Length: 323
Image 1 (cartoon, rainbow, N blue to C red):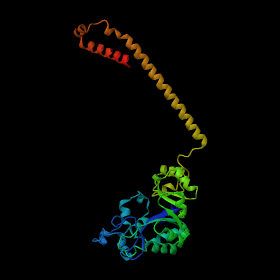
Image 2 (cartoon, rainbow, N blue to C red; image 1 turned 90 degrees about the vertical axis):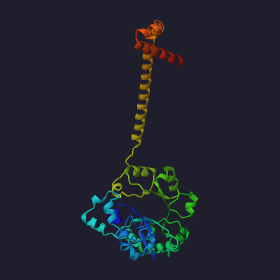
Image 3 (cartoon, helix red, strand yellow; image 1 turned 60 degrees about the horizontal axis):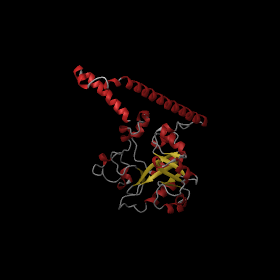
Image 4 (cartoon, one colour; image 1 turned 180 degrees about the vertical axis):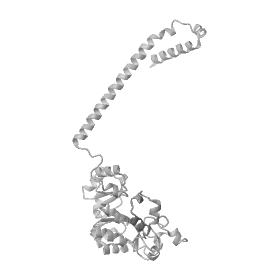
């Protein structure tokens, strides 16, 4: 359901995480266990802490994978759902990779997925790459798939050269081109504009994740990223140009005004300090009599307040003479 909504909102591609079941069915699951996003505690109370890949596909189909979304509202979007949408979400089951690929194939969208390696002793621990590849080839055009798993990449490339080989790690241009890498999938904090342009110079595109705020989307856009992964496609799809976009004339005007304001502030600060120093100098000459015309002992008998004032003025004169 979420992928259908992403397509409706204008997303150009769909991203997910894939795990393989105990009997060899690739299915969608982000976490290593089923506790957070299913009712496994109700259906299989003694197996809540087991790895998700240790369940068979038949067992996974007994679980509800939608109630948690309605109750927790992780992206603040539940209020926008219709009653029909809520009913559909409430009855959501764990989807298979095949179902996911069919949605992308019908809509002509790109797909990108992380593939979890099964734990030690899993029946498909050595063949999960090949099993997943077979499902991909059976349900979608390979050219729509951004193939992210790095294990056995050379073999996968040889078997299906139409896949868009995608790397989750930065490397030298030579290493990437030798590995037939056409796209990078990286966290936005690890890339700079210069790096994006460098990779683009050899036709390697960059996808940045996870970007859900409009201002961050603008930065990625201006840095030259070709695509981003987001949890807010309904928001970002409505942005038709960078929020901070400036014409050359506006940019020049901004810096001229900045320079003018800076010059004004510097002059104002200089005048302020000049006035303060002038007043302080005049005030010092007016009160210099304290140290010449009165004997300290007589001042004490006249009043403590006056003694303190004259001492303060004397201290200030001493400070000025030292500095």
